[in-house]
Length: 70
Image (cartoon, rainbow, N blue to C red; front, side):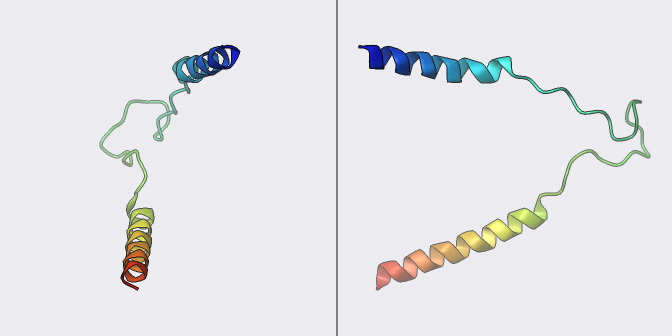
């Protein structure tokens, strides 16, 4: 019974903990003012990492398929 209570307490703690933690919003990259037409877009490109992951995933899948046919 004590083990179940411990699991429930830890589970509740881990469920509620992310709700209590909040990060500060980052400052605007153009300074402190509102975004204007000359400001660079906010965000980061995902193409480089995404294409690498797609190639690695395809290679892994091909390896698994080849091994399965053997």
